Length: 94
Figure 1 (spheres, rainbow, N blue to C red):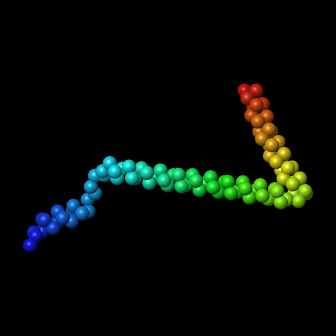
Figure 2: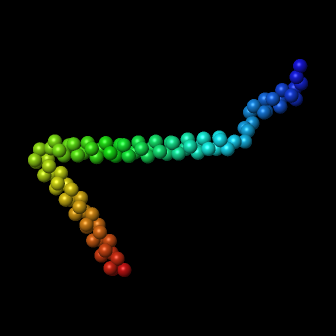
Figure 3: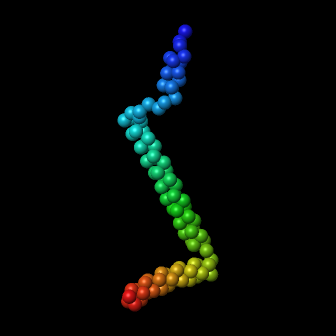
């Protein structure tokens, strides 16, 4: 029959963590990389699917819808130019 001290040591040995081996560290690093890559691939896939959906909508659009899409793009380009102009003029004032 094992004494109380030995039983305590056996339980304590099971509960405490053992130092990680090199292989455990490598596996943990690879798992982190896999999670990061899965997230990046998922994000890229979602953006790609959205772009394809947008392009498909443009191809199937009526002439009026195509004109509206082009006007929206022109407005976005104008906004970008306006923001650049404001930055340039703001730098001249300094």
